[in-house]
Amino acid sequence: MAQRTARNAALLLHRTLTRTAANHAPSRRSAVAALRPSLSRSMSTNSQPKTLERKAAEVGKNSGKHSEIKHDMVHFKASPNAHPLDIKKVDDATPEEIAKYGHRGVPHPIWSQEEVHSVVQTHKEPQDFSDRFALASVKAARWSFDTFSLYRFGKITQNKVLNRAIFLETVAGVPGMTAGMLRHLKSLRSMNHDHGWIHTLLEEAENERMHLLTFITLKKPDWFFRTCVVVAQGVFMNAFFVAYLVSPHFCHRFVGYLEEEAVHTYESILEHIDHGELKEWGSTPAPTIAIDYWRMAPDATMRDMFLAVRADEANHRDVNHTFADLPADAEVSEFFDHSGKPLKNNGTEQQVA
Image 1 (cartoon, rainbow, N blue to C red):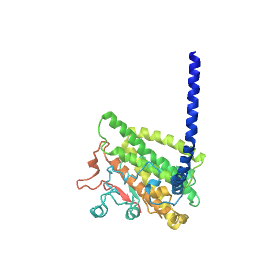
Image 2 (tube, helix red, strand yellow):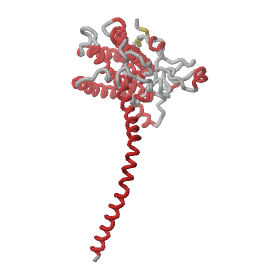
Image 3 (cartoon, rainbow, N blue to C red):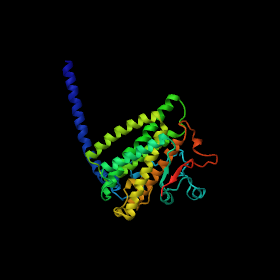
Image 4 (cartoon, one colour):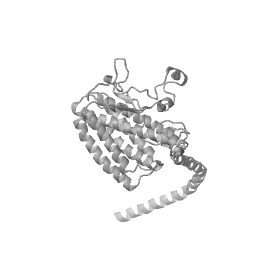
């Protein structure tokens, strides 16, 4: 009896739902038909960002809107963190600019034309055995890479330059991250402030990574190249990790000399663009990621990009030589003399002709 009653109730519910659906079907069809034009417009509107993203990925195509480029990094000159050499941040507006545009309303380029063209090659004279060993290590590493990569032999080509730049940046991004991590852990253990070193080192590592991400838009490394990078990174990272535990002074001096070589490399590339085998890059549009990251003009060229990279490397050179001259627990104020001028060379850094 109970089963029959339940079955009848289920049949009654099914009939009711069927009649309700039939009654509402015309109205649903009418609603869908009415919405069809607006849905078509919405779909066509929503398809535009995808097109813009594809166009933004093309080399040399840039609308000037930074939001079209998706990366997780800002240049160290655009960050709010204090810089150890007290360089002017790009968002530090002058009183005249504030009066005209409002506070921080001017989209300054990362490096001005005066700054990128005033970079000079300098050399820090070794002061002790540690410095001499750091310099010898860098010179040996450069000679080995130039020899085994055949960079020293034959004409300079775009392929050679990109191979060198990509490999260099995979190495250059290691010291800042490793040193920043170790100083971070030390700050946690000692429960003390780090006095501004950590964020500077991490910003340096991220800046080198952005160099790499820029260069790989121009050339995709093959499996052999990537294997060499993996091996080199594994060896160098572990060696630098141990070395920094033993002597931060040696490591910062080593990186300072490494950045001297980087400045020399990019200086040589610029000379080949102006007078040598790389003249085509003088008019080739820069990648969009470079235009966005360094806030360059929309018509910036590869030469402009290499100028910006060289300015970055010169900054890292000066920062690491400064760090090597300071005690490991130096306060931020010790980066400057009594008049507020940055301690860039202490009279021992010489310009290279």
